[in-house]
Length: 102
Image 1: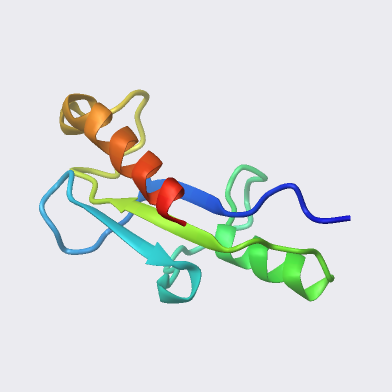
Image 2 (image 1 turned 60 degrees about the vertical axis):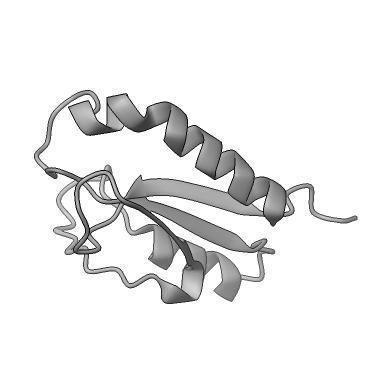
């Protein structure tokens, strides 16, 4: 049986050295994680490590594209920053266009 998912788009903040709100698309092999895990909570994880483990255990992982949005801040708080709220429709349009082109 063919896998149901043909492509995955993951949208997340990404420190890229760009202006806050800037967007870039990456393939999974172009992404580098620098996340330091403390192991003190089950809520932290490293998506790239999870994907690697899934592949190692024989799970089919379809092609993945990351949509990185440069954060204005990475402080721990609820809600979106003002720039993300202002540009949300633009981000959705870009995400959809990228998925349709994949």
